[in-house]
Length: 106
Figure 1 (spheres, rainbow, N blue to C red):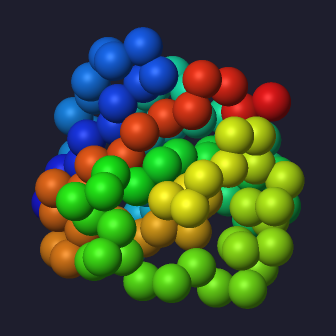
Figure 2: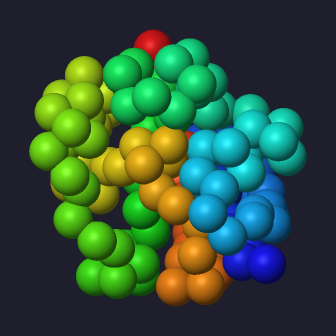
Figure 3: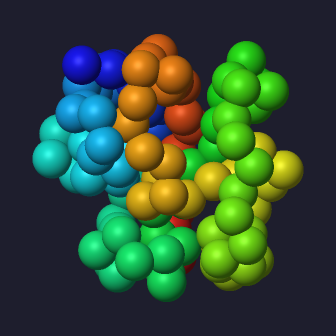
């Protein structure tokens, strides 16, 4: 199973294992990682699962689809590396992914 690292704004590191096909948001929420709200349940309609892709991973990430890109406009603290974790699907290609969480989703 692929693993990922989520780093809270305060530097706390969480190692999470997810199932292939599961969203990164689901894996993080099942592991009780603070900082990802997922208010819409993964429907790409709230931007409360926003995270920053680590610079080392940015070149390996697929482009955000138009729905995600539009929703990212509403993400608090949006950056060029911002993604919605509900739209990132766990796969072997994402094994080792590192994400940084914003200070707040609101």
